Length: 628
Image (cartoon, rainbow, N blue to C red; front, side, top):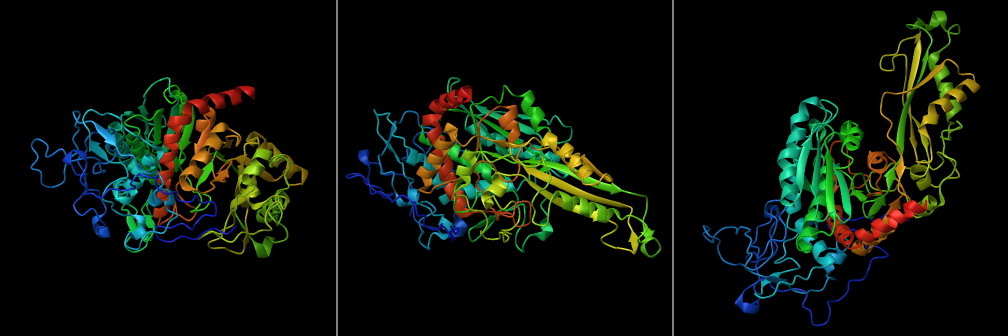
């Protein structure tokens, strides 16, 4: 299946997209901003309420809210409701302020949940006058009208999704992302440590406190490394608890290497791309989740139906130092029933994706050290053993010219049937910026998706002998190679070094030393695809988007998911909001605007569904674990 291309504000129409339903009979899908309302009031809205030029759409104009059901994550987010008149001390001119009106009851009009801009989402083509899919509507989908004597609030899943969509359309999310990217949180630079604290203390803490979280920022147990934050929002200890995660640190900016007019520390929009360091990895992703959570909270009249704990670290790009020890020390504080977070790319930009864990990574070195110094090849060639040749042949004995590994003990025994089934419709490669796949590389018995997501790989990352940059006519005394194995949960990494040692000895390469590097092992993890949480999440994404999501049993790459799956013992579900060609870790990192919009919708729907189904799923998961 070829991936669908998409342009501004559009993904290609999906074959399994759901038709847009018509409004129910007798229900008016929209009300003009100036239409008279019961009681002689008018629905609130900005004068004109129509489209405005792009340069003026970055920040939403606040509206007066009749009743405040949840604090805004970002100042300037739109409120809903009728205008009760100027607040005390307010002249009535200029932008209205948000003020709670406890004496005014509100009822939400019933409207159809099947509006094209909601369930068409990023699939439907938007008119050209709405550049990049963002627009200003006169009113959000749900409207609060003054109705003294009534205190009923009709909430719906579609309202939560529409709330989240509004944050994209009116530019509020774009502005929020810009504020976050302005913090140069480069965790690989020791001098950036104050910026890492500032991001948590100045930027994240005020936002989540307004949502009802209590916050504590902790020093890293590893001295001099980035801090960690735990934010907690408990509605009822008897409710299920969600643990979410993100990282606010980024790799180095490489300022001089970005395209002209771009900067790593400023979000710039060009076409469908939002450029800036951390937009994709990971500021944009955890801000999408926080924004969707806030809008779900509003749609549910101030309650989620579950508790939330948020763990943000500021050292992921530096190897997550201290994360495992921190979680062990704070295990009770972080106790939860389900882990849902976002990082990494989707399988393809146009296809919503779930992954349930990640492959592990194990690094080791091969060294041949025969003598000190190099010796003239004219005088000693043919008399002295060449360590480069010995090491090259040793590696060739481990993996052949077609990339097929020949070391017993480095590969898993088999791919579980549930994993094979999940990977059956997964297609890899072929996207914008993807390299051409070498189809003959690796085990010919495996599909392309099985090679990346269901199996182990052995790769040589670096090989050095002599002086490659300024070679001389001399036989080197040493040769060195850095190797690594990406491995799935069915492999025991403790057996890797003994297996390599045994293989080298059996093939006559006793001069080759093998040892594990000082880099920490990142463990492999995978939630079983038959977990009730998996089917539930897939159904939620499909309901919101009208597309069949991709299910990856694990990422091909690595994440610190073992901390959540093993140390904290949680079922883990990841919903990535980026795409493979986002240039993360490189100059010109970016998010795709259509993916941002769809991701806000996805997470609002997922959080709504968690409030409805969380208790049942928790019981089912525990029963399944006990049966095993």
